[in-house]
Structure formats: C-alpha cells, structure tokens
Image (cartoon, rainbow, N blue to C red; front, side, top):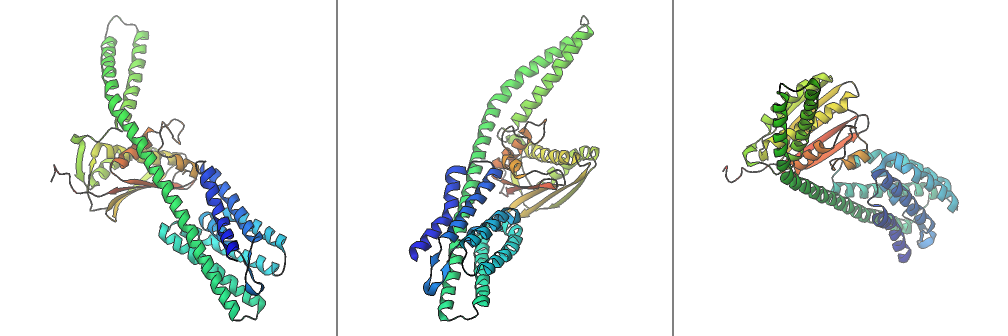
Length: 420
C-alpha cells in the first residue's frame, strides 16, 4: 500500500515537474492550457492506479489536482477536469458509479465558488485554505459513503481518519510547492525587471546629455536661418519641419533622461500631498476633454525621500494612460487615493477604462511594449524605473472591459543624513 501511495504522490508532482522543465517561460494563456491538460492526466492516473486498503476499500487522490485547478482557475478551468473525471470514473466502472458521479457534481458546483476569495488570500493563508478544502471534501465524501453503505464499524472509522489525514497533508505539501514556485517566479521577474531598468538608466545617463548638446546647437542655428530675409517661403517651411522634428527628438531624449538616477537638486523628503495636488491640477484639463471625472483622496501621514520631478512625471504618466483607456468608452472615472499601510505609502490609481487581459499584464513595464498603437512603452517603463529606485513595488489588477487598478507601494523612510 505504501508503494502505491507514494506512486500517487509522484503522480501529483507530475504536472509541476513537467511544467517547470518544458513550459515555464511560455505565454500566460498557453501555460494555463498546459496546466489544465497536465492536471487532467494526473487526476486520471490517480483514478487508474488506486491503492487498496484493508477489508476491500480502495482509495485515490483524484480530488487533489481537481481542487487545485478549481481553486486557482474557477469554473472555466475546472470544467475540463470535471468532464474527464466523469468519463474516467465510468471507464473504471465497478460498484458505486452513480454515487461517485453525484459526489463529483457536488464538488464541481461548490469548490470553484471559493476561487475568487481564495486568490485574494496571502500565500500562507492559501495553503491553510486549500488544506481545509481538501479536508472538507474528503469529510463530505465519507458522509456520502456512510449514507450508501449504511453500516460502518471501527475499521471504517480508522480508515476514514487515514483518508482525512492523507488528503490534508498531501494537499498542504502540494500547495507549499506551488506557492514556492510562484514566489520564485515573482522574485525572478523582479530581478530581471530591476536589471532591465538599471541598464536603461545607465544608458540614459551616459547618452542623453551627449545627444542634447548637438540638438540644442542645431536648433539654434536653424532658428537664426529662419530669420534670414533672403529665404523663400518653401525654405522656411523646410526649416519649420526640421525644428518640429528636433523638438520631437528633444522629447524622446527627455523621456530617456527620466530613467537616470535621481538628481540631488530635485530630492525632497515629503508625504506626497503636494505632488498629488500638483499632478491632479496638471491633468484635470486633459481629463475634461475626454469627459473623465477625477476623484482624489488623501489619507497618509508617512514620508519618504524621492526625486520630486520623477515621481510627478510617474504619476502624470499613469493618469494619462488611465484617461486614454477611458477615451474609447466615452468617459469614465479616475480615482486617485494615497494612503498608508504597514509602514508603506500606497498610491492607488483606479480607472473604468478598457482594461487589460493577463497576456498584456504580464508584459507591462517591459521596454518598448505599449497597449497603444502610437505608444513607445517608455512612459510605463519610466513608472517602473521610478518606483524601483524607491525600493517599492507595483501591483496591477485589471479586467478586460472593466478597468484597471494600479497600486504603487513605496516604503516610508527617515530623512536623508544630510537633511537630518
């Protein structure tokens, strides 16, 4: 029996190992399909290779992969597993087919209902919640089994205790592995993003100033030429176009310069109240053009050190993106809320725009990626760069067609030594 139990546990690890080896770096939508397929295979293998208990009882771990997919993916992801479970149970045959099918239906109806709340929990709480779900599932199974067989003895209760323990412990082990994989993936993404931003910052600092000087000189000479009395209107038109292109180049250089290290002359120690008022006033006319209502809330007493110009540009970039996402819907509401939570300043920017899917969210903040046709991605990259310099993090929640919520979480800090 022990060998079969360990074999079932290895089957449970099968989707995790295969996914990590072959599919981890694939797109999000592709990964979801692969995980559903691998979990379905694992569930069916558990059913086809159950372990025999004393007195003729059989037992398997089919509901652990099913519950994991139901909790993480909801009804849409768990439906293929539900169909496969019914088909596989009918194929296995034997006694108790009808009660097993009815029990599977009840679990399919109940378990995914908890998915949304489950995903909102902290990692440690998710482990406990998943273990509790597995325990309750097996408890419900035992109750239905008692109803079917009607007569139970001490042996049954002994085996029931083993079944409850096995499901709970194995679910906890599986969840601990999954949460560790998720944590490692998030950490790896943060390290890669930090490296990208550092490279961009170094390039911007070394190149932008050198490019700006010849642009300024060229612009000056062109302006002098435009005042010449011997020039034709056609030639003046050429100079005007040249000056406009130089201005555009200057803007691109300024965007790159925003990735450079914070400038000492712009450094402040403040609570962001002044920056909220300033950036809101800047963006209000732009919001009115697209019929967007702007609502601000401030509830913060914490302060930190930051480059005021960079943080203001960071906020303006996010406001503009939010307003432009509502343009397609004919208007909407932009909510800006600055608060404090566990020693950090939290800037919450919420819109009711077109939103983003998971694929777009996964690429957010990467160089030269933009959801707008005319966008360069530098604005969002600048946002991530600014928050990264403050040792903060960015959390994004978005649903296609419903809107997006950005949370900038910046650790509070004591004043710099030179300010003390």
